[in-house]
Length: 224
Image (cartoon, rainbow, N blue to C red; front, side):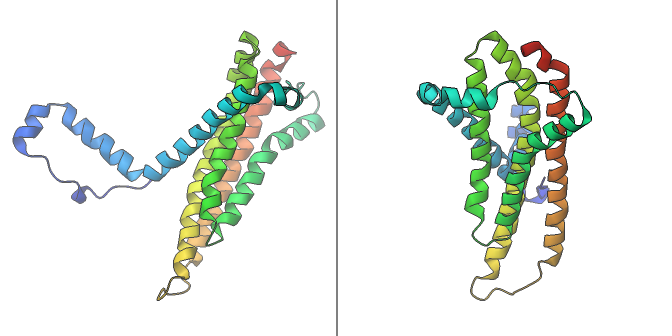
């Protein structure tokens, strides 16, 4: 998170501050938070917009894609051996790791920022369609969504939202290199930080897979 320079925030006049009472500092604090984290807010809203779009797409076309979603989203059996557990972990992490790899490459391109912005929308689209499909199955579907879908999806979404922010930041740094009169080079430190942060996001993707497998071990037998 970025930190706001407090010297840029104008001091409130004495009478207005007293008239506002204790709520005035709270308003100032929230304003500083949103100003300092506007990019995080933007990417989170993009993800939520993708979720909403997924719900709308399923609502309008569930008769056409219902069979395909039933095949993809059926509750998978609990892994009962180490080998099946590792296979389930890899399958759960694969899509998130693939999207993180795409974001990493977008950050290394001067034109990658628009694609990086769309990745949270695409991931949210998948979550929205999954939630809509399971919720249409009744109370059991709502329980599946709450226990087997949302927990690991939110962790994976956090990795992709942060990865998208980082990819856009790095892509803009590269794009500034090609502007007229810009000095070339000087990005080695930023690139090392970029790699370290994406390793952390990869760890989040792995954690999402672990949560997915763990929740299936605990609850998948209830829905089969």
